[in-house]
Length: 210
Image (cartoon, rainbow, N blue to C red):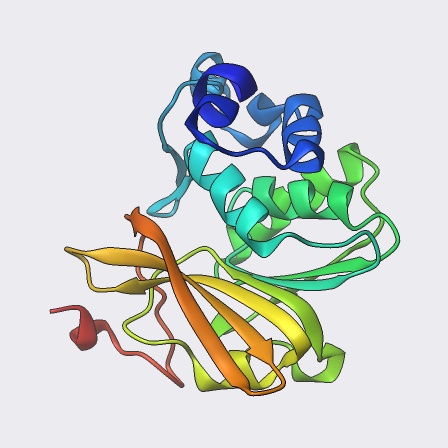
């Protein structure tokens, strides 16, 4: 998977490649889909959500480029796969992850325990609000698309911090990287993506998706 689907497409971050090579992706899927765990495709995990295809996980993680001691916020725990990857990268830091569906969060927490990932903190809630009492964050990774970057999340970025988020509507989305700099917020695109929508009663409504 790592060689054929990720490294061959230009992801060169050795730490990201090594962590993904050692993460048992099948543990994050329902039993009937575990044989497809390493396919080059997203897979359903229930509650209308999906685990992203391996390349997209690698692209987002490499774009965030977390350091070993970073504090990272993830919006959309889902299966827990992305949070587990981040936790293995920030071994001297901490991962904070928010999920709005309690059933998915309970399952993800059990996977974290099984993997002995003790540097992950979880919360059920509205991801667009972020985690103010744990801010600021060196990195913020959003695993659902938004029509615009949530202001609360941008405000929780540490100086020099980076946020990776899909921006767009249900038809067309770009993976955008926001970088906090001394001269302000810079942004660039890492290419086209397709994610489920980020729904927030504070920031975005269902009707904004058309």
